[in-house]
Length: 225
Image (tube, rainbow, N blue to C red; front, side):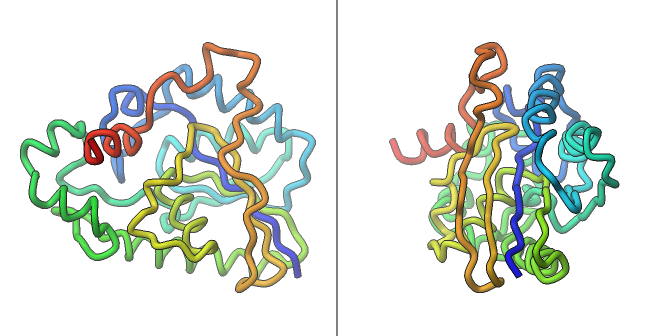
């Protein structure tokens, strides 16, 4: 049946630059994020997509609308592809979370699958909703190519699940804004990773290459030091 899914992370937001946790907060793209999305759209214009899905959050929806233009596809918004709900941590930097939620942060960092963020989700809940939505796409779009525009945590979760990783270590999968990752499914149980975190559409424009570490990369540096 061979379903091929292009997973794209949304363009940059101002909260990405300031290293604030976004989660379900509906943060729009920055001007730079829109430029990144336009270049991504040019890159993907020659691909043939049969369907396009995205998270219903603004940063993913806006990226998806820009990418969809050359293809004339309807953008189908799916709440299942939302970022992890960071609850009380949303809008905070790592330093602020570490100051106010030190013990929970340490527990979550070592065991995110089973640790609930205050007012938010456990990673296991994210993995399950993303797995279910992706499996439905695979089973619905046999012999087709699908584009999904989502978030770093969502894409890490499905790639980690398909590769049978210990998802307590999912933060080790680094994803840039507007990066392209491709999963191919001869059938659901046999998914393979064909491409990961590719940003070649930004290579010739240094001003649009990621200049900041991701929030997770920044957290990793601090937690592992």
